Image (cartoon, helix red, strand yellow):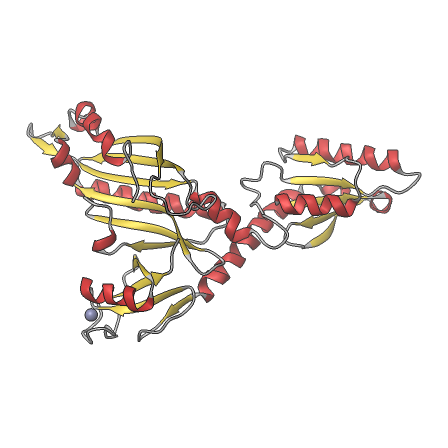
Length: 363
Ligand SMILES: [Zn+2]
């Protein structure tokens, strides 16, 4: 269980002070909250940390429709945000027994980690007027009457970093999408006797040029072999490495190697292309993770244990959902947001299914 003393509802007494009339709405507040896990369950770097930082958006609206529009916007923002991190995500409407207490409904944002376990990286809650009634958050409408607000919350935590590290990492180390990599390009001089100065000068020039194009880069001039340097930077996940040796200078090219091993030469006077190479690297990370996710979502009609995520026809009854969790030793993620015709039977009770229920072993 989490202790969340200053999160979510702690802000609502203030909402009731700040909101007077319809002109104060919508009210949108962003806050970063840290909170401590007090249970003794083992911690895990990034995924289950002792001190959690939540980044949260809290909103209040005049109508349910406005709040619903906010939820839709949150979903679009999440799609853009996680795409920038090259992370494919799933939105699932959590089942009643797993929604945020007090919410009308909760939408979980999950990723699938290479271990086959899902990891929740964000959530969106629609509260309708539930908290407004509890905290007396009202506004005076155009009709001169007082109405309760409709509220939503949207949030995530540093687990997002855990997802980046876990999903894009490999045996060589981490791989950071260029959108967030502090160093996007590392330049490694390939020194040959008699060419030291020439190679170093060229490396510095390339670094200067890249920086002038807004591409953060660094020359690794340490006294180590190129092989050792490659190893170090792969471990740190720098998206692109540029190798410059006497042969490259002579040919008027630079050799680039992306963190995922794709190697090519580009003309020295076309360094602009690096930007596109960085984007393509991010896209490859996304595609790879997306392929893994798709291959590990299994639609099954009867209760059978599978790795990854399963989707089972479900009648909607809590009892049947619980039974699925218990028998498969998985946790419900919830229902896909996209409405879909389903002509299947719930494998627990045999009644007509109304939706798919997603389940996974989760962190
Ligand atoms: Zn059923």
